[in-house]
Image (cartoon, rainbow, N blue to C red; front, side):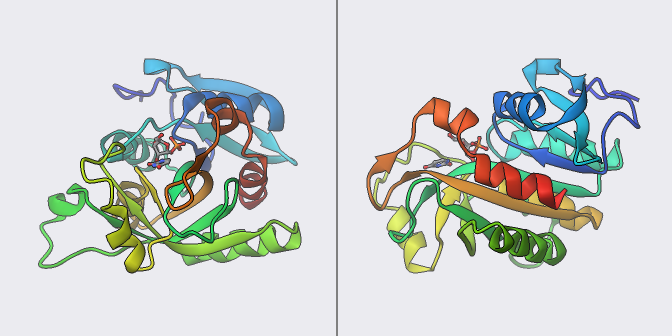
Length: 233
Ligand SMILES: O=P(O)(O)O[C@H]1O[C@H](CO)[C@@H](O)[C@H]1O
Ligand SMILES: O=c1cc[nH]c(=O)[nH]1
């Protein structure tokens, strides 16, 4: 069965999927790190590929930007394609001034300004958290490969260009280390379905330090993050 957004049929997609926001980052990973690659999706140019990494079957697919977009793709991967491990590999803006460009964050939790969890009609606020199994294994892989990582709480925002430029400082006061735009929805979908999710982020810019990487570096330059995710898969 295909979906309105994915032309794969069941079986085309591995149980573990790497999920960059940028579909061209997915293409780059497939072309440079996977063997025996088959493309399973190009609907809306949201490229998806399955191949092998060190003999393990793994898929990689773009999610687009924002909770609405990853909400659709991750829901379909879980419920229509049987995916069990969803590993987001994204870029983020650092709120913690100790984080430098290209540092890697393992998101133990995601706070949010989004309304994604309204659909569950909960009698309170949902704390979106990573799979402990994926998180602890990712940390171990990073340490064994000498890759510095920071485990921290992030914020998933609907907004990239904030009207109030200092809002980030209020999140930083709560210990939020970085911002991005998808993990809250990913963690919600995974928790609701009882599958595993983890977000790994590379610092693409620092709001605290006023520095940033180029678009090309964001597409192709985050190789340590890719290595952790591929080893984890
Ligand atoms: O690099 P990706 O994975 O797209 O992640 C970050 O980059 C985009 C904004 O530039 C948002 O999607 C944000 O979450
Ligand atoms: O500042 C940033 C950088 C990457 N992604 C975001 O959502 N925000």
